[in-house]
Length: 352
Image (cartoon, rainbow, N blue to C red):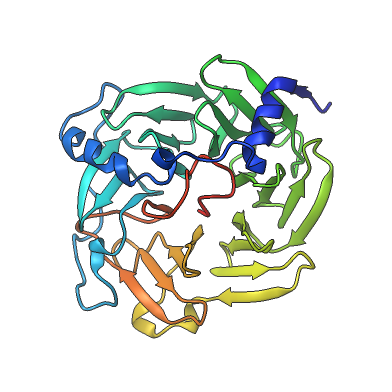
């Protein structure tokens, strides 16, 4: 049976924020003002931290690549296969947060107050730059959490992969669940299908939900009442983000493709590894970020140090930055560029 619970006050607050009814203040214009806190707090170990084993790849850094290496962008960075969050600024790693071996990171956000929200498969949590864990939701037995998004500073949307999968919005200040709704799944009984149900779901600036059905081969947009209003068939959609122009940027994991489609489902832009010079080709991709300048940043888990982690291209597919620094960072599943305009917790602002 489909379950649906909603707090009318909570939904009104969410929709008001998404529609722009509460514009960001100057202090919320970016995360850059918070980076000094990470530089001073980075050396300490948080109470909830657990060291990660030494990486298996060779610590190689390639410097003969386009762009400025780690100095290209301040960023929040993480990847499957190495459970350490990284904050990079001024060309160096200024902060890390480790959560031990096993499971995986698939989503992370730095908020305008400096807190970091992240998923680790068996839980979703928010920590401060000083590494204090201020909120955690643990996945119940038989479920997994791979995607989360802040909606304002008080609410978090996430999906519980399970039988059935459930989209939830929780007020982390009150502990109240304001939205809870079942989503479709390949099977209602086969636990082996749980892991691959969802990697990314996004709450849009229009107050809709954009869900990437990884194993069902489609991206579906739902309105606030979870009525399907748009869909697009694609082999293995790992992530999808709604762009300000109304198009949708989708990453297809199996075909190593990043594709922008318009509301009619027509491809208006696409990037594959073969579109790039051989030295700059990413080995795989899970997520992509569209920057304010129109460039697209591809995240790649690489191959244990054998390929680029990040590749930035212009709309014309000119490569402007390739990061292949396995001495400083691990695989790239996600990246949030921190000098982009706006408050990341405002839906539709951070396009990652």
